[in-house]
Length: 79
Image 1 (cartoon, rainbow, N blue to C red):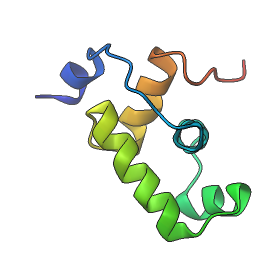
Image 2 (image 1 turned 135 degrees about the vertical axis):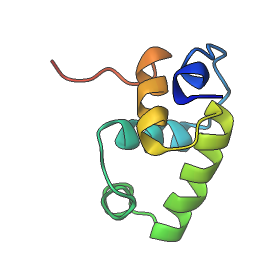
Image 3 (image 1 turned 30 degrees about the horizontal axis):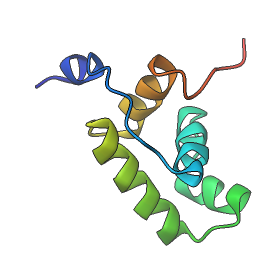
């Protein structure tokens, strides 16, 4: 499957509130270190969340996760 094929996957997975916060930060282009600082988590915990989010979204990288978050309405970029 290509990245574009996986982006057509429209099912909206169930996320915890914390996973949604992390996903929104990913969509903003933040690094794990920045996310950890902003959400008062360890970097290891952020990595755990990121792995779970990528799996739930059926994507292989952060960019695709951010795009999927926008497509599913979980993140609205500032205009």
